[in-house]
Image (cartoon, rainbow, N blue to C red; front, side, top):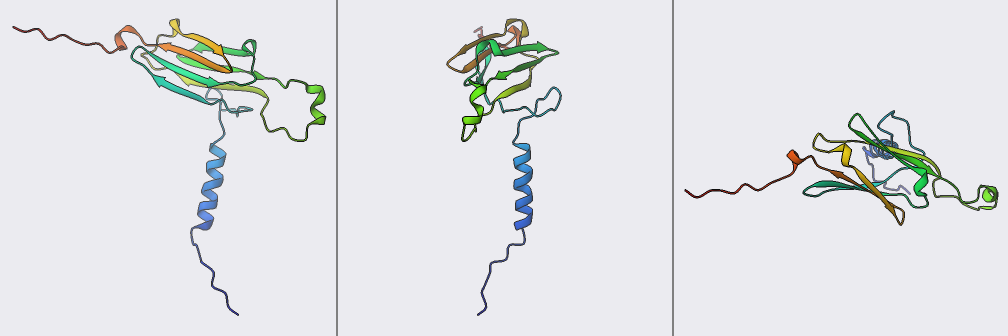
Length: 145
């Protein structure tokens, strides 16, 4: 008995595209194009007088996080350590990523690098990137004559 099978001429192309997308979904450190050991995910929001960068760093201690500004680039790097390396063999599955991480962001010309502030609370790194005075929006009053 003959069976009808749907033929999809683009199946192999879609499979290749999925593989390429998966490759580029990994995070690269912009500074040296080396792959980070684990991806650092961030949200960046713009306010009237500053940019706000929020980075999720669960399980990382404040002392293991480094911020560096050079050549108008902000680099966040550090290490997430495994709680008890000695008991590693007793795990059935390890899905959380450990080790070094690094991510570099190009700062805009409107950012004032001398006034950057950072706080770390409940596993979230919050970095405030103030805008230069000339970059802040301002209102101009119209004079009546």
